[in-house]
Length: 196
Image 1 (cartoon, rainbow, N blue to C red):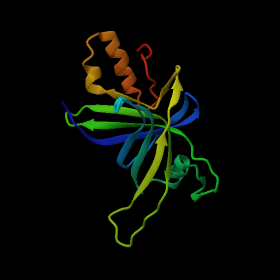
Image 2: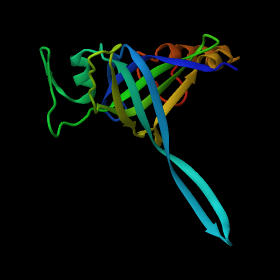
Image 3: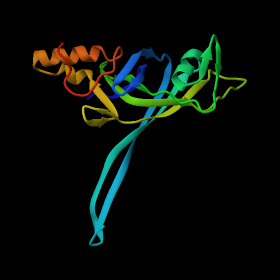
Image 4: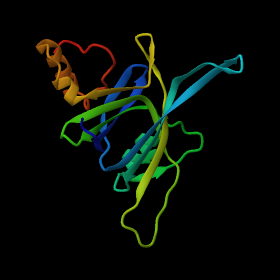
């Protein structure tokens, strides 16, 4: 079984309204991406033992390191800052925009997995500049919240190239291959893909 190597093709889609996303915004020069699933835990006790223990997914914390080569216009678009003609300014009370965030994970067998977080916000909380540096990176932090899609609360979706290629039925495989190919041009939703 193949192992994950690294992340690439980070792409944002601005959330315009629930279930409706804008055009793809490629985010070049991603250095690293870390996500942490947050669960609500429940435990019940009786007769001096644990009677029941469960956890339900609530949201996902997101941390991204990007090269500081990112332009100010893109930085402002992602984080809700004001931008005009090369000038970027922070406004107290400005709301951080929501995005779907898609990316690809390269596997060591040269296949890929792809993931989309449906309702994500990102903010750049700190700035570090040193006199001697090998190139600064910008740290973005945020949270991916659930969105309702066809009556269910979804926070993300994963797709696997190798598992799609293993589908035996030709029509089904063709639908999923087509959907996989559209991963960075539109936000892929859960469930059966549309006809190929």
